[in-house]
Image 1 (cartoon, rainbow, N blue to C red):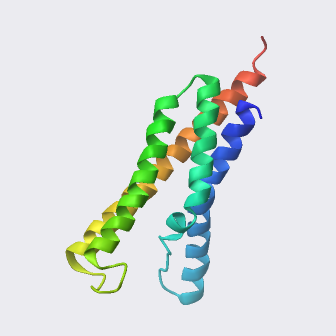
Image 2 (image 1 turned 180 degrees about the horizontal axis):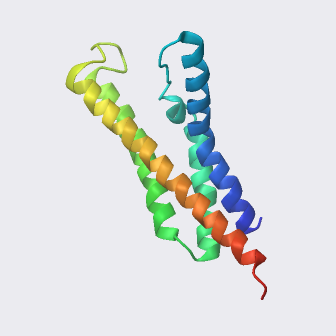
Length: 141
């Protein structure tokens, strides 16, 4: 598979969970008449983000561009997901032992926001890599 295809497919896979979250949030909010967004969708669809980030890393290695960015981005995404799960279990939020409020909720929202920000950074970098690779194809040799 060519590096251009890897970059484009990887970028689409990384952005799909975020797009799905936004689309369902807009539709749900319009139907309910108030703001409703399921911000856990990108965590639930982690396999898409993981696969897409892996494809972007592979494309970056083949293109000799931004390998560190995609490597660190993928590592950070995995670490933040695992850390959020561990913290949810340790604080009793996962089991329902404690209500989702106070300092426990602040920590969880911070971890989830960091996870989403990491996805946005990797996805945006994927767009830039895809554009670079596709632009290079259009330039005459």
